Image (cartoon, rainbow, N blue to C red; front, side):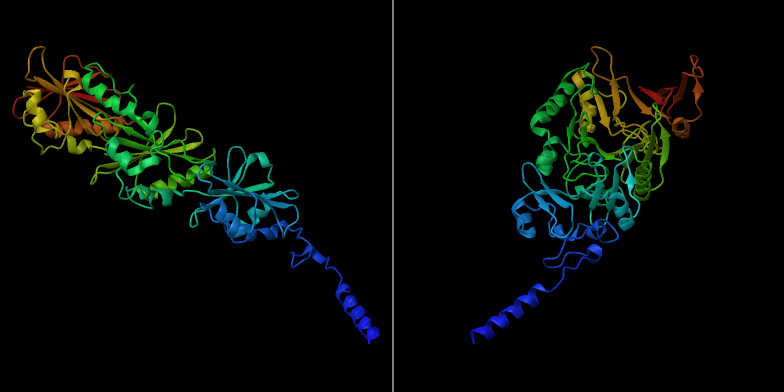
Length: 464
């Protein structure tokens, strides 16, 4: 009986040990088999896709949640399926939420494999390769320092996801105040995303008060910007956005919001971004600025919203969004004043009368009273209507306003056409020259209007 049992045991052992190891083709590991040497089988899908071993990791999940999902206990993980492959899990510094997943291969350069799998990448000026999947909001890139043997996956903000695919609304700011908001409204709505408020908020508030009190105060040198820190990188940015700002105007409200979209110096990515903006905003007027950079200006006269895209300046495409006051509306022929915003007491009324007629836009400015409105079409700074009075006199004798048409002389010609449609043919003044053009007009009520056109701007004075 014992002999029979020993025979059976020998047979079982032989059967278990008799299976030879499968060495053919370096196949994918199954059970206790060898790791695959074919790194190409690590990646799947026709667009950016995490390898199966780490696919359960959710970006934005806590470190504990990720470790549980992947059954790991470290931020560094060796692949169980592929030879020479490892993973690094990077978390945000403060919240400890998953921010990056990097895949390293010690034996194979990854760009040819990923290009075959996902198509040609976007190449930066440094030679880094990027792949984007707008639908999932996932991107992958080969950082320069890793020499092609490491690919990093992160979430990113696509242009359509951040801004919305069409129209002048900003998708990320839905139902939150932004352009036109006061600093307190902005802080209440955006909280920690107004990221340098604790450091600079008081300085911005002080700027409003200083400008209102100082007769000779200049707005351009005041602290008037705060940073807006959104969560996700965009374009070729490898960290969270840094270049987004909100700029306040003289009246203490947001005048403009600026966003930066890094291209890494890639002409192809810049071209894609410009095509998106043309689709979103419609037909643009393209200008060349004084340094050779390009600008595309988009307008929505119905809502008085505007977008300016600046490019050709290096490694970023910049978007500025704001409200504006259409010059065609400002100088419309069917409005009673020379400019549409003139109150019934302008010119000739006292500052107190004008303030009562338009308290929203009246700014005392240290006794040099003015009305402040959004900028007109071709300028990013606000429109100032200065009220003129003689020393010791309360009543105004005139008001002045400047309309800029920077880098767009055709827009200057349009201003002349609007003035003549409203006031009749221009009469050249005695001091008129080709480069410094002075004109005289008269309103139907007999008020003298002096006009001066120089390079990139018109100046008007409407007299009592």
